[in-house]
Length: 187
Image 1 (spheres, one colour):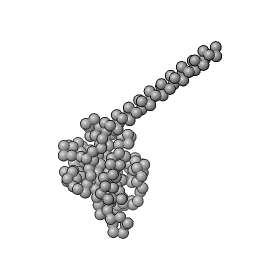
Image 2 (cartoon, one colour):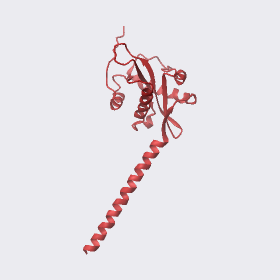
Image 3 (cartoon, one colour):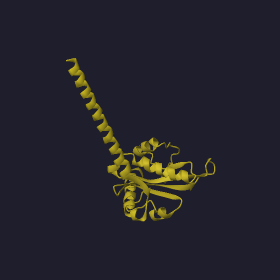
Image 4 (cartoon, one colour):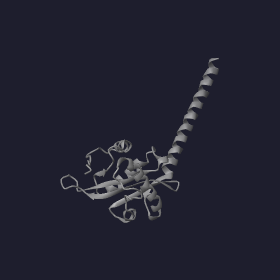
């Protein structure tokens, strides 16, 4: 009886080990698909139509936080200029040939009283709703930070509406800290 139970225990241990290996392989395949089929790349002219759709997504997301925006149609960005400006890195996330996110870093001159001369201003941070929560925004920030470092930049800035708690949490998670609050008074 003891030998039979010992054999059964060994068989069960092997099955558990095999199942664990299958789980690990499945996880690694999922990671490979996620990382190898989604790329961050520089935007190009052929992306303009989708970038304009993303721009309207940014505007629609921000409209509830700013009652001074003009009625549609409005534009925030000169995308054609950003595509050719050496001081701008406009990137997109592409998954299986579909654009799913965007962002840019633009080199700006810093205020004369801070201890850095230039900084990268981040903007046009957009992720398609069906792809949110997958860490894509962080990958865009990482790519823009890498480009910024290559340009000799040591600081990144961005603006976010003070009531946009979701975006603030995402940027805090990425390492950004609040620094200044812009205040307005309508006259």
